[in-house]
Image (cartoon, rainbow, N blue to C red; front, side, top):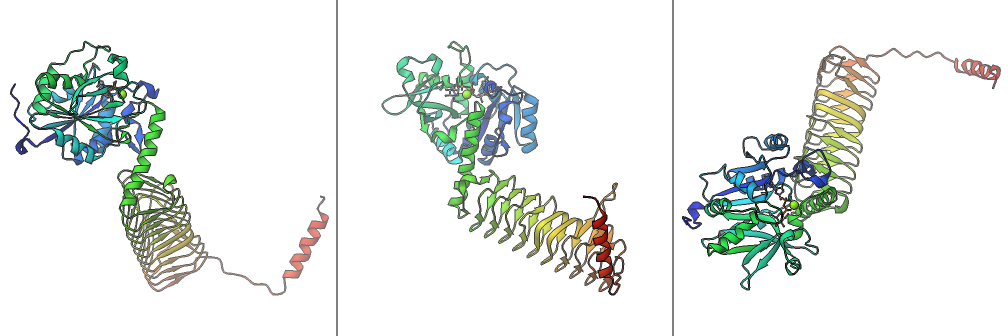
Length: 478
Ligand code: UD1
Ligand code: MG
């Protein structure tokens, strides 16, 4: 057989990710690999892992709901993967071959991964790849399970080499007692893989082409097969919703552990939820019940207090999010503060030291350095200058029912409580807005603006008003 050894020159990596199955036991109209773990479809996990390890090409074998699965991958990794359509599901060996057929010229190591096994670590895959050598074209990832029912069993010789993988349905009673199972993840030298997959037969209990038979074929060619044992959690897949819920819990715990190891404090790891793409700086403190989602990044020394939910948020160092605040697609500058009960919506930006307090909503608006909106306000489509103060109840009326308009508030402006700023509006630097104003016209720099009815005071009138009220009450039948 024409099979050159794996040398540094052929040190290339490709990945084939099997994702054609339906996942019947999910009892869903949705393809299994599209179910989410930690907010990401399962298929995205192995794809990201393979791409992150420099695999090129990365092939996703699709079948059931092929277009939807392909679109989900493309949406997350545009132009970085290719899809191979397995029109008929004839088994894992056939699926691998369908993938490999799209790489006719590839030379190097091919990783075979499952689309429904999200938690694989790079380190384990690197060790698996390192097992592949000139006399060992195949390395199989294995794990030990207390109940191995249903899995392919790993049979080894005295030297520890894998001699065979026998599927549960094809196994003898003695073989079924083996607790080391095939995780379904392989690293295989490309030329051997091409030759082996073309030689597979479907003469087994399920009438399928088993990728596992490449072990037999390697042995028949006088070659060795390595088995790399990993932690069962890492290769846990999701066949049903119970296992999916387990994966969710595992994913959460692993993410928290990763950040704990990197110098982040979690006050209640069990109730904290951290997505796979979240970044957190050293000495940040994450309190109970916090959810960090999407591409959120939390800078060094930040505090995210109880019950806050951050999605695609960026917190610069020492920003503080007080309890029960919600941020989506917004950013907080160094030492800025939000909440309690604060809300930053997309494109909100708090510059350094700015402060947004309770029951304040900010959307598509920037609060300059040290600016404040501490209570009960809505700030939308606005630019608020450094040091400005928006009093309690300040509302930007950014929408007239048809279009959106901007409000500009200059540096050092003071807006009194319960003011209504009807956009488009600009308030010049240093201006002062009286409480309770409704402003529709521009306010120049350093001006005082009053937009309210003048107060009237009538001396000594209170007693007669009170007497009239008493009389009214007495006449009213109960
Ligand atoms: C497979 C292994 C078994 C291993 C187990 C680990 C074989 C023959 N057996 O069994 O040794 O212990 O995984 O989970 O490989 N798929 C396709 N196209 C197909 C068939 C499958 O894309 O034609 C995909 C499925 O979507 C799934 C994966 O391959 O993601 C595994 O297929 P599945 O049928 O679940 O294999 P098992 O019987 O579990
Ligand atoms: Mg399976």
